[in-house]
Length: 159
Image (tube, rainbow, N blue to C red):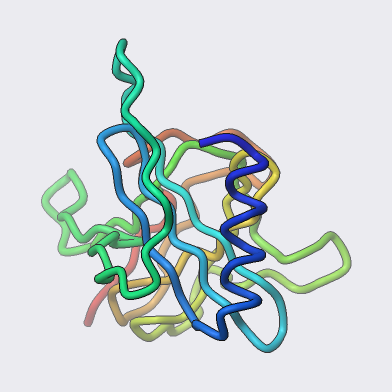
């Protein structure tokens, strides 16, 4: 999807009064959601197919596509910790900006839906929310470091 098409989608969302639009093709998945504070755009890139798929016009009544921001899976070494993994390739940030406090620190209690970090992908800042509740045991990614899809970012003790 080209930048102009993404801007057109954002303009469409602003003009239509809709709160959220989801589009999914073989090549990519995009979710544009309106917020009172700021516009949040999330994208998840899939492996590129050799032949480009035709681009469909945005549909106002698009059904929300399930795109988990964090995936539960047991951590290695036989413990009962849950890994919060990156849903995309990008740059990991612990805070919204350098002057802001970290979203979470080791020892913090989190609930499902709490923002734990931001991942920048293609100049878009995506808030990553936890799908688990518990205590942050370890932060596995370095601030401002690149992360890969499905890379563990945090260890959470669910007890």
